[in-house]
Image 1: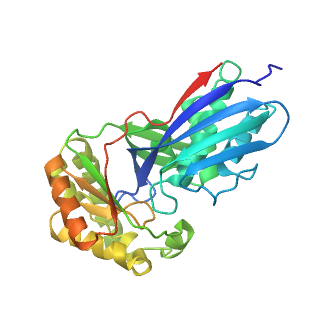
Image 2: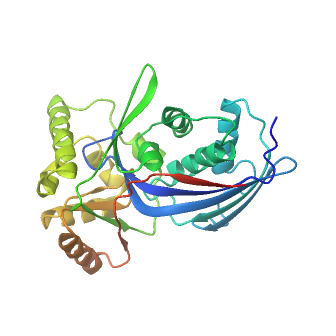
Length: 306
């Protein structure tokens, strides 16, 4: 068996925003806001983890760390022996804010494992998505984190799949981030088991329209981001988020809850509109951080340093 000791990889993974309004558990978008990771295979066993930035002093720094678990899971999946690991994580994606931090951690680990095993194991895009979905539970965040752009994710008897689309160059994302967190599990628990037929039809129409708005016709974004499947049910748990979404939409800005929240994503149709939205947010919600981002088209990247 080839010794991996001394192999080192650098990994970069984008933040993501899932749902995008009506595309519940289906649509996701990669954003130009990145966690970076260095992983070195060392002699012995176990993991030594340094975390800088988001999660520093909070997330585990041993084998129970989510990135380490994802590396170990991927090695096991391909029948490879796990070496000792030294990890240095530089995190800027906020935790518990609806920007895909756990998906990014999972993807970081899988892509790091792919890099460490380069030339030994070949991993397809389908392999990566399968493993990421097994670890994360659903593919809507991990697909854009892996592949970039706007992704449509779905599952069938052969597992998860994705289709990557390129976003219209006018689309200008604005992420508004509060300093409080939201539990994804809590947000999901507020969902009803079934919804009215009219609401289901409403969301099907808006999801289809949203694909057109994001890829061809950004001027349709406000109508395309309407939702009746999940945001209203979760509003009581995130009153400030709900109020900010309503404020933005009343002023003509296509605002949605980012992922499970509590961050708000505004999908402006051009940079000038985004600036207006940012000024409106600063006036009424000065304690929220405004991130003017681009759509990331690359997804996760890994470089092997021999």
